[in-house]
Length: 233
Image 1 (cartoon, helix red, strand yellow):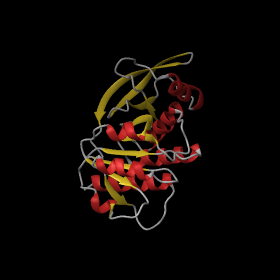
Image 2 (cartoon, rainbow, N blue to C red):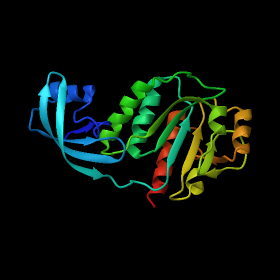
Image 3 (tube, rainbow, N blue to C red):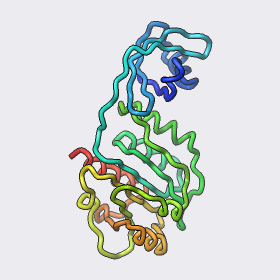
Image 4 (spheres, rainbow, N blue to C red):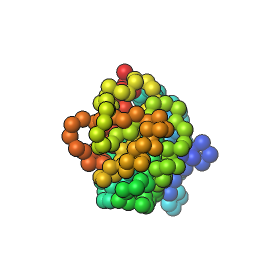
């Protein structure tokens, strides 16, 4: 059954314009057809198309189903986006499919990109949420300066992955199953020494993702997978 994203379904018994267009023009669905909705806030809805008027698609909701959490703890990944936008989009798509609660894009000293088009990012996240049959859309944060982000509080375990020498533990050994976890991933040129020092003073623990030197988007996805697997225990 086709799944449609309807964030305002509690207030409006119709599909958003883009979803309605896909339903009517692409899938050629008709009045009486059964569809499934998600509000992106944790719930699915079984519905029937009750009417079509021009570009508008009205629905009648028959049942609401709250999706149980798919992992324990709150998973937050904060990464410096790569220069090529398609690599950031690839990361986000796969991270949402695997499962993550929040994604933040960081502006760091060595960042290769200063702007993220959030409308495009949200579309990719919504598509990945629907494809992976999830009912919750991750929180997506616009580009945030490293200092401003570090100064924010986080109720959980905080980690930073960097390439500077020093004592580090593997992330899979550092993550506590069920705990809230936040991991920082730097740009291709790594975090600057001053940023690393700032994070350590703010309580972030240095971690390693293994012996291989990973690209930014790969490292971020590995971190998401490790956190998610820990949340399954």
